[in-house]
Length: 280
Image (cartoon, rainbow, N blue to C red):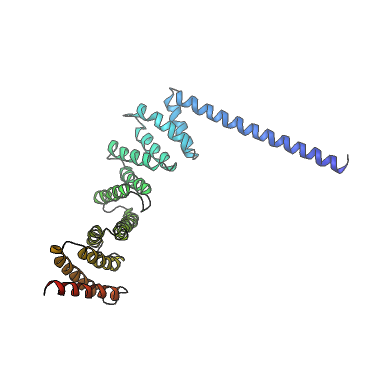
């Protein structure tokens, strides 16, 4: 047998081995799925529970979750009810289905309020809401819910080891809300809705007095306030121009070396000139 024939025979053998491996893998998966389906339909709940725990330990969380869900009603009020509820939530969390997991952790707290796991379950319920919190540019309803959930946890467990972690999450979410609110206010300014911009920037400063965007917000209060004032009806211009002057004086006191000072002083001068015309 020459070298070419040897190579050809070797290649054929390797292909057969690969085919046999694929068939074996398929058969193994088929049998596994078949056994899992039989377990779901089975009335042997103890065997089903043991299998669910085994799947969980082997990190097969999807099959574990299905079995734990299947066991929930049967074990309610029985031994292992707490374990079923806990590991059902844990498996769902491992699958990153945070919406469902959050519900399951919260449900665990309601069912087992005196459990040693109740504190962790309440934390995880809030954490799942945090994981559902979207990018700042999207609706922030879930972020507000997560903040509320963490605050309720802290109120209930003020000495929890999770407190430093929670503070980090709260800072992160509040920064996200702050960015969202600033962008909303600035968005009003960009489309020349100056009254809404003026109100939104003032609300921003009231809500986030220590924000690193405070200087910017106060500058846009002056700019939007001035544009709003000079486009007002004659009877309201004077009062609104005076408000812009007041806003400038606050800004100049807090940020005397601001990069916006020259532009702000220019607006201040215009306000003085407009007032002078109307108060002669």
